[in-house]
Length: 349
Image (cartoon, rainbow, N blue to C red; front, top):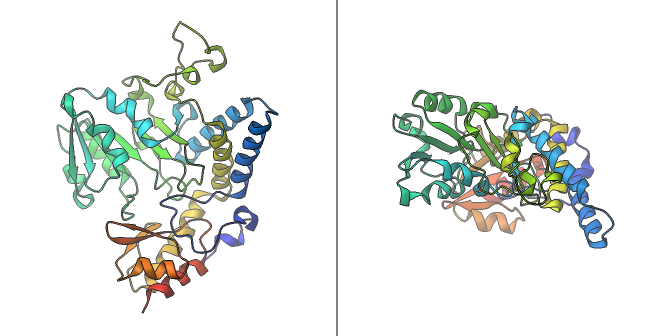
């Protein structure tokens, strides 16, 4: 296997301690991201600069994200969290709309729809194994995670999108657990939302939403503020309403320090390349599975049911997560073969 260490500068994660197998909870920042965020905080503390440079970092991060998923930057809005980015879309659904989600979908892509039950919006669920068959006439929105948080299950974006189009349903994808390691074409969906603090390794509090032009006019930018203006620097005060004509109308005013760290984190992803990261992550995940006598998989997130696994891993200094009663391990750029082998050794009797 061509390991990422051979072509990634080692100083990118100088402070990462061995044994982090929990990127599905949060990613470890590469040093350029950490340093940029700290520099912004130092400048803020000292009052030595204005904020415009931090705003420019937000724009560069938007452009980087657009390249990563193959869409136009003009169709990307920036925000803070997945639920905040989904809220305007859920609010735009007509009374009585039907939404289909996987039965194990993370609640950030369930609750925004479910809170509209009082006006007749109904959320239906289907298991991931039978999700495609559940897309039927009468469904208005098909909302799903490209990679499931609970167990790493991958969804077939193209097949689901095609099935949804056949019944006239809108396709909403939460790619938080995919973007940064799994190559995919964001333009296959009507909306793609991503929290950047996991596989994109950004500070918590930044996120992106791709909003396809052909559906965007159906949504009201209910959190519009000065940053959503056609010319933000000319939208500080008063009427008339003058929103951006593209997805920036859905922008949330950026948390500057977090965005200062987000832009270089995405730059690292682009520098290395998602295809390479995918190959690296998958090879390590399957090395882990093979060590436990399991069949190989197709995800950088795997779950195993080993008695006492959580305690065994903790005793060996391996940090993983427990989801639905099973140990969940996730493998990313900074994960090494040594990390994997230590985890296997801790779990094998």
